[in-house]
Length: 363
Ligand SMILES: Nc1ncnc2c1ncn2[C@@H]1O[C@H](COP(=O)(O)OP(=O)(O)OP(=O)(O)O)[C@@H](O)[C@H]1O
Ligand SMILES: [Mg+2]
Image 1: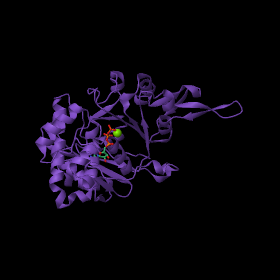
Image 2 (image 1 turned 30 degrees about the vertical axis):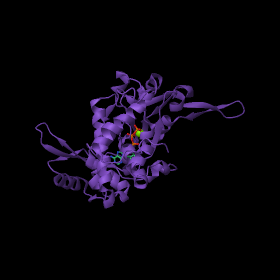
Image 3 (image 1 turned 180 degrees about the vertical axis):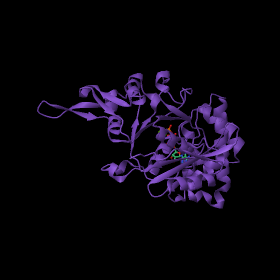
Image 4 (image 1 turned 45 degrees about the vertical axis):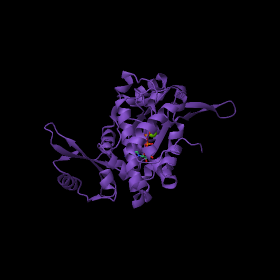
């Protein structure tokens, strides 16, 4: 079955794009209650339309659309629990459309950016829209080719059996393979993946008589990594080789703007919308903004990432403890003295009117 059933759509505006999709697919095209956030529509009951705004060569806005087929339940047999539940994802920079594009072109896609900017969540949300299982593999300095491809295990009576690793499982049976922290692992692991990522799209299982496992038609490959240019923030990350990188398309994911952060926080923590929290939320977003600016300018050797993820845990605690005690629990107490001073004297003092006397108190 063709899971990318139509060529991509483009139109000068969204209404024309939706009309065109309706016309070509002969199916109803429906927004969901999440469309305002994810820019995704349902096409009939088994297809999904991903949309994104781009500029053309003359700088005019063009709406683009891609229709993908949802995973048939028959293909999920026994692994429906690997399909992530549908959560909330605020799409930005046409990220979901780009995931769909990589999927439709069968191009491995690497998402890179600071910790907590939503790389993993993006792939999981994309998978939940398609109803696709996710095989998520966390790579690290000690990952071995056995972890990835598989290993021989004793099977009793002096015999051995080969057990597929996670990558082989996804390549053999289909699913979204998500290789996390791709630059935390070493060259030997990348080399094993070369064959899968280039034209041959196959893994060779040396320990199983050189079995060639071809990429299942419903297998797609995604990866995440933190930027290698911040060694103090992400120790252990390695420079990825040019030979490896050319096999991937990549997207750099940046921080969201403050209004988008507000939307996510209010969605996840509705209690924050109460009027008595309005000033606290504004100040917390201001703090995030200042942190990101200092990080981007690389001043003061500032080595802290105020990600969407950290904001989320800070805000969760702040609803119970107020912003200052919550900041201590969410991140402040883990900082070194130099970073604490920057927060106290330059960030909190500048962006908030909070009473900071208890900031450095013990428990
Ligand atoms: N665009 C978004 N919409 C909704 N939630 C988001 C978004 N971006 C980030 N988040 C939230 O931020 C948290 C961190 O996201 P995620 O775990 O995907 O980060 P990451 O980029 O994979 O980080 P790491 O590099 O540490 O693995 C998640 O709980 C997620 O809910
Ligand atoms: Mg992640």
